[in-house]
Image (cartoon, rainbow, N blue to C red; front, side, top):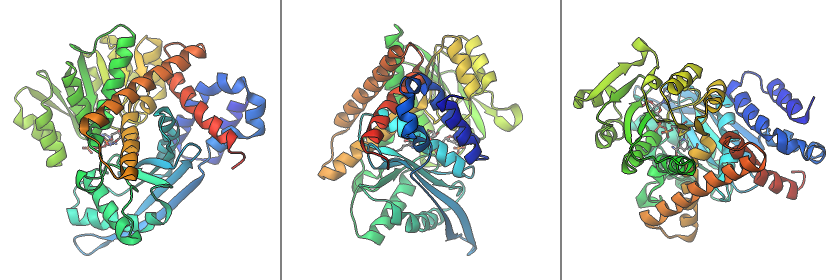
Length: 448
Ligand code: NDP
Ligand code: 2IT
């Protein structure tokens, strides 16, 4: 059995019941086969792959908090500090009932390569809890965040581990967490990113993941001789990533016709009204039914009644921006049948392995999340730089750095794919380019 296969088998045996983690590891290891085989003896002697797939540290803790009825609630929480070869652990905090250790490990593993691809000095980590902020009062969310941070504070710091937002963790949650960290440590430092602008946040961080997704998508299309302007786009999700992906797509001259949330999806033939979408989802934290009610051109499709079939709409570009494994083989077949040109992942691993293979086999340009959504964490690293120098940059300065980073990421993975004989396979290119830097740093630092 080859070294790559041995390590994958070990991952499955040692990490039972963590299918998303297995899926993320398998995709990376499959891409790395050609790189590993060229240098197998040295990598094997150093157990480089075993170290790469095993987190440096995994923290599991309980979070007790009191709800508005005086009832004590208890949630499970996690922080996986996966790899610090190229910088302090960096990655978001997910608050969603579906969170478990396997989900956080898959996200932390992806983050290692994504952060490497940004070209900035950040290692990989991820955290979260099965707490559901939906339907909770602000006071309940604060009680949870303060209790969560009371424990997490012991393990993080501006030079050790810097968490940020993800599903369910936005500006409100980051604010409460930052306040508690500061209170406990007395330190006013860049320990979290995605902070509010009045207390150390960076301009353009809120927009960065969605904007970055479009910068990379436009560059991928351009490199293949195609213009984004004039194209029709499907987006899933209606959270932080989806909203700003929608805004930038429209600024670049494309027309976005779908968005979704966990209960339904919208088809808007006239193009999504981003201001209305922001009002409904970002300000009111309401359901997309409110968008449909306020917009005559919008059709609302209930997922429970009709299934999650938003990918049946005929579009040129599809941008899944909600959650993992939300675009399956059947969806990929519908997209291809309707002539889709490109799929770029705004979410982390939103496309199943079979769907990715099908899209690639049918000539669809496919940009994996660890490259396409790296603009968020890249801008988080820019926020860390601003905090360290105690300065803040203008929106234009941050946005222009973000554009440069996304264009560079695309060409790095395009070049890596070509160099290893897999031209046009951006999944392999991203995994290889992300891996090489981390592997070199791990090797240089000895057996740690
Ligand atoms: P938000 O919480 O702001 O929005 C998430 C959106 O996805 C909501 O519309 C939500 O619907 C929907 N959604 C979440 N979970 C599910 C589910 N299980 N089934 C169906 N729909 C779901 O999160 P973000 O926009 O920040 O994150 C979206 C994706 O992007 C995630 O995969 C995240 O890991 C990834 N990402 C985020 C970055 C960031 O900077 N925020 C950076 C890079 C990647 P509802 O409103 O009903 O909850
Ligand atoms: O998945 C991700 O890259 C994020 N949720 C953003 C992480 C960050 O540290 O900004």
